[in-house]
Image 1 (cartoon, helix red, strand yellow):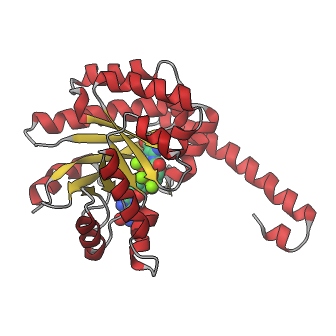
Image 2 (cartoon, helix red, strand yellow):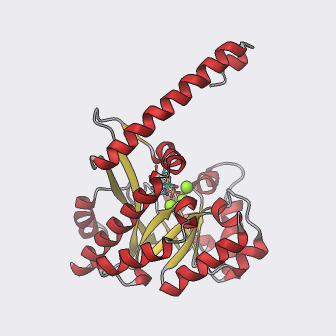
Image 3 (tube, helix red, strand yellow):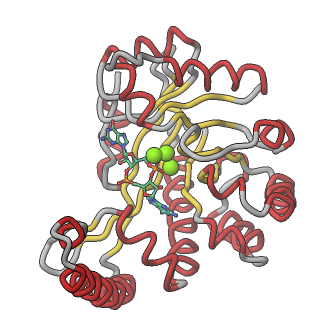
Amino acid sequence: RTKGYQRGSHTLFTREMGIEIRERAVLMQHLHKAFDAERLYLMYQPQIDLSNRRIIGFEALLRWRTDDGQMIPPTDFIPLAEHSGLIISLGAWVLRTACFTMMQLLEKGFELDRIAVNVSVIQFRQPEFIKLVERALHDSGLAPHYLELEITESVTMNGAGMFEEALAGLKTLGIQIAIDDFGTGFSSLSYLDKLPVDRLKIDRAFVTQIDTSAGPRIAELITQLGKKLNVKIIAEGIETELHWDVLQKMGCDEGQGFLIARPMLESAIEPWLRSWK
Ligand code: C2E
Ligand code: MG
Ligand code: MG
Ligand code: MG
């Protein structure tokens, strides 16, 4: 993308950008088709209590495998879906599917606390969003406290008043709210204090940072902030025993990451739950 710029060639730069826009449009068409053809599916990553290894639940993560077997990461196609508006129906499908999966696990007798579902700002802005959540819960039979919506920090901070109102509405349903990728956006702390948030998610970047000379500074700050605000803290991206150890010692309640398990297919959940010690 920056190649043309580096060469000082304005023409090349524009041409490459043109290609990129065309590619995006093609990708968007493919994404719409993929949704129709059910080439999109969910993977589930376990979340555990770091102090006693108890499995708390799962985060649902969206996947797209194209017809030729290529995996497109959600960080690539979610923005596309947001741009085209597809995220509204796609997000509704994610929400319902996750609720039904969770309900099945509970009915099978697994003792889990929650299913976490990522929600895009575009979905959140929809006036009908609360009704959608209500319907997903009702149709699946899932009690509201089992559902946690993960909202990214950037979402929370623009359109403050509207956001507060929407959150309050969702909270009256009895669901839980987590702020995702916490520490990477631009939070207003005074604002955070007022929001009905149940959990802050330490972004993976700050867990990775534990290995560097910067150490666990930011993760620790977020954990302390959580204690003061009386909200739970969960860390994502736990990849090593050291990460787990350091996070647990600083008082981080919960975590998820490749060390514990990679996101898995729904069919892999039960065997995994039985094998976890
Ligand atoms: P996120 O919500 O912060 O999800 C955590 C991401 O970190 C996931 O990437 C997960 O696979 C990855 N991860 C977890 N543990 C580890 C680890 O130990 N090491 C490494 N390297 N990675 C780890 P994924 O599944 O690629 O999702 C990326 C982002 O896409 C998510 O970040 C979320 O913002 C978005 N996303 C995924 N599914 C959905 C969805 O259904 N709706 C919306 N709106 N966004 C979604
Ligand atoms: Mg998330
Ligand atoms: Mg996250
Ligand atoms: Mg993240």
